[in-house]
Structure formats: C-alpha cells, structure tokens
Length: 146
Image (cartoon, rainbow, N blue to C red; front, top):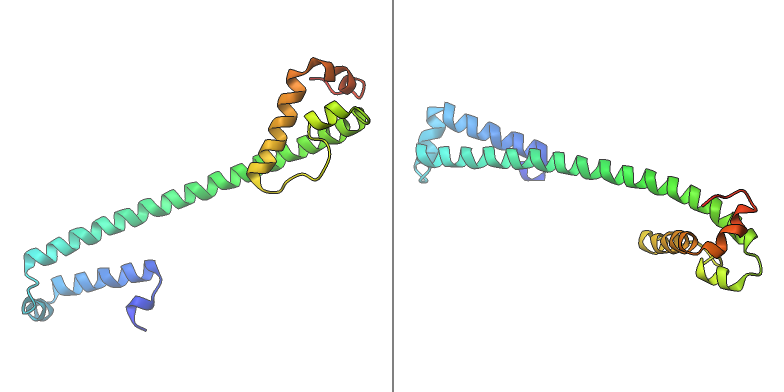
C-alpha cells in the first residue's frame, strides 16, 4: 500500500522510518545527496518532522479536551432540561388561564431541540419567573419555592 493512503499516525511512522533509514544507511545518504539532500538539509527535515509530531500531539490533546468539554456540556444540558421540564409542567398547570403569564413564560408550544433556541426558552422562563414576584404565589401553591 502506498504510504499516502495511510492514516495520519501510520503516515507519520513511515516518514520517521524513512528519516532513520536515510541517516543510518550510507548508500541511501549517497543516493539522496545527488538530489541536493545534504546532511544539513536532512537535519532541517528531521527538525520539521519533530515539530510536526509535537503539533500532532498538541492537536490530539486539544481534540480530547474538546470532546471532554462537549460531553460535560451535554450532561449539564440534560440535567438542566430535566429540571426545566419539571418546572415547566408545574407552571403550565399553575398558570392555566393566566394569559399574561403563559405568554411571558413561553409556556405554550413545543420546546426547541436546537441549543440556542432551547437556551432562549429556558432563560426567558427562569428570568421572567425570578423577576416577577406576582407569579410566585401561583407556584408556591404547588410547592415550588423561588
């Protein structure tokens, strides 16, 4: 198989073995010298390769960190959504027929699945409940404390 069809890690290993063979084998050194690859150029290439390996390692760490943060975000969002849906259901019962509260708290309709729109619904609900003391007695009658 041609080495360019390999995955990134295998490709880097192949390149590393080519560098080692070039440096260790005098016949290979002589053959590549004809094409302008002096000892200095080979050393420059090896340094570039080391930099590439370091960047690859940093990238792998960054990608793992990103995956971990996305997992934490998803877990937190699930927890918040569970709590939100609990209080939303109570609010829908508590404010039945109270048109101003229904509109202000966005109690009607489906909950959005897209994160940004979902976040707006949760934020509006929480902010409007917490800043409007007139709504508190309705919820307290169902055991919800602000």
